[in-house]
Length: 329
Image 1 (cartoon, helix red, strand yellow):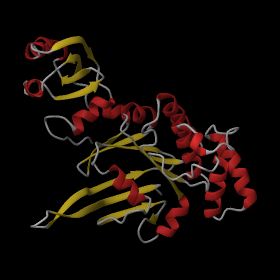
Image 2 (image 1 turned 60 degrees about the vertical axis):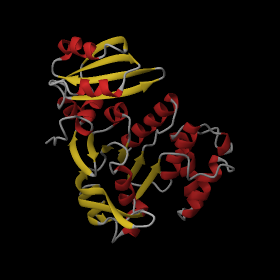
Image 3 (image 1 turned 45 degrees about the vertical axis):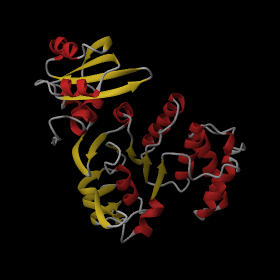
Image 4 (image 1 turned 45 degrees about the horizontal axis):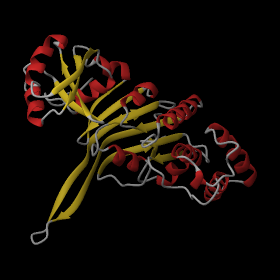
């Protein structure tokens, strides 16, 4: 039996817009997605903002009812058997909601243990185990308002694990964390996988998904456009080279001109302090550099590097490429 099964899942939001002539607009958040997650697997769901990641997690955690299709956790339907699903799952949403800041970490966990109707002796043992797991042992009596953001997020993990769920949902758990806090939380996630937990992870960080996940699904406009291991997804862009150009003051029309070059597969721009990093995917690699520099004539160009593609480049090709979306078998 799979830990998670999704079959033709749909979710449509309806919103009333307009002032004088009001009408209903439908937004398709999920457009018939299907996937399976095996027991003990760390499964990643990647996609741009608005692609349907959080909607998927909310349906799987019984917080949202789908418009169509089916989803089950450990064989239990998330709609018809929600009361059987909830004791078996834990979930963490990115951000700092869900904790009482004026209470200590220990008092927070005792409070949530009471909500789970846990036996007091069992809850005491479980709280000590979890505080050690997330690296908060020794600071459990401090108020949460004095914690760093990373410490609060680790306390979120402890809260979600109080009832020892079999399946854990992590929706962008490292969002907003500093590099040290994010690295510590990723180690906690690895430790949980080592305990045999099934983990469903959504993230915007490609390196994080590459380092943690057994398999990854890429979602865009409510549809799964790729599903495979990180290595096989990277193989999808093995025919490409990535040209990175450090540019100061590039204009949008120039980016469009680069994008229009016949051998260019995809173009993206990352803002970094006072400069921009122009990323150009093409089978030509270094042979294309003179043509790109000619188009960037009015901009100041710094460092130029040609490198092998990464998982992030595969993601760009799938959801942001200029040749349209492609399905990976």
